[in-house]
Image (tube, rainbow, N blue to C red; front, side, top):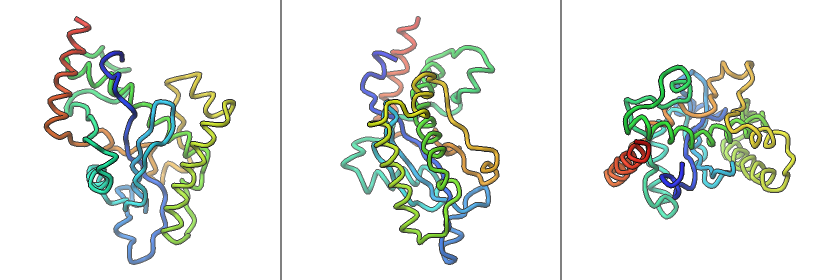
Length: 223
């Protein structure tokens, strides 16, 4: 990745966490799979730690809306929009495994971007496997459900920073391609590791120009 992504400080994505809202809010929290969820957006660093989270948005809210809401509420943290991949080009890991090598500057950029962003899927996987309550939330008041999401993130970070021999993190450290998966019994709840639209966040024009320059530099360096 060096030197093209030398200033990259982390990866961002959204994921859905099981939620039991009050009856009057049921439709707002009803997601695309017919289950009620929180739409949680998180930023993680490359040591697999949470560095920011937007918690408690209704499951019906689109990923891009969650992002823009965070940009407005926490603009001091988000000094600019995240760097999004190119739309209409191959992006996800299975696309590269089953097809030819990336060609053209946009595919080359997407390939490196996807490789870096893999860390957020690994974080979500370990986090949900350690705290299965996130996959089947009890019917606590919504404020408590949101606090439980935040508390498990804090506990996750504490373990990451203080328990070097934790078996889940050891496996991730040994295999950079390892992504924990949700057990079969939870999959029918529509709780994916990360949001299906997690790579479609819109860039602003400044970031679009920056991405184009970066994609050109990547291709030129490999020519």
